[in-house]
Amino acid sequence: MSDTDESNSTGPGGSDLIREMGLRAVVAEDFRAHQRDFTLPGFQTLLVYRIGTWAWTLPKVFRWPVTAIYLVMFLFCRNVYGIELRRTVTVGRRFVIGHQHGIVIHRFATFGNDCVVRQGVTLGIASEARWEYGVGPVIGNGVSFSPGAIVIGNVSIGDNSQIGPNCVVTADVPADRILFLSAPRVLPRDRPEPA
Image 1 (cartoon, rainbow, N blue to C red):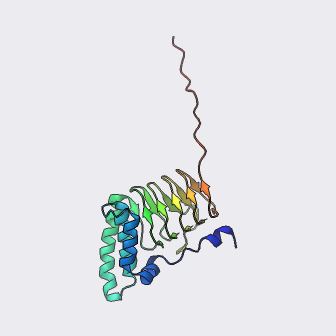
Image 2: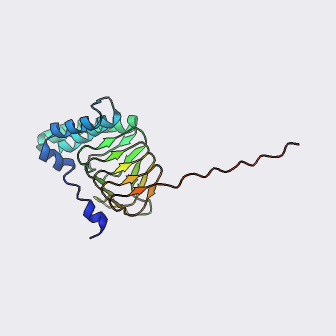
Image 3: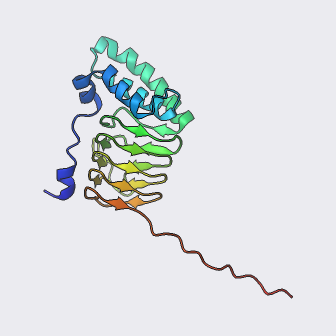
């Protein structure tokens, strides 16, 4: 078993988390993680996600009306806030969406507890890769994504790792790592000689 396999014991998420803790307790934790601010688009999107996963814990007679409400709210969050977080994603406790716009999360991604995603983050698969149902990136506990980070492929990112701004991750990342791009170089600008 590799380092990343050992570090990604994320615990329950999605519908399993709702069954274990209850919708109210999970949403209360999310609210506290989002600075107790209901107006934040990240919290509102996560609330919609939790309602979508809660729907699958209900008897069928109630599931479909709640799912219809979820779908309308999902489309609002995706199209207005620019945050695509489908109910098929598995999200652990205290997940934080730091800012809005440009956030696309693979429909079968798995997140552990205490993860942070900021604006412009994309988690998905490469266009050349074969799309597989139920297979997506696996993100451990305490992972933080800086603005513009991209994860390509069905990779695993270990616990307590930090992905720096504009990093492109294409391979598994062990636990307790920081990924960053080298600093930009400052070069003199060539100017034409005055005539």
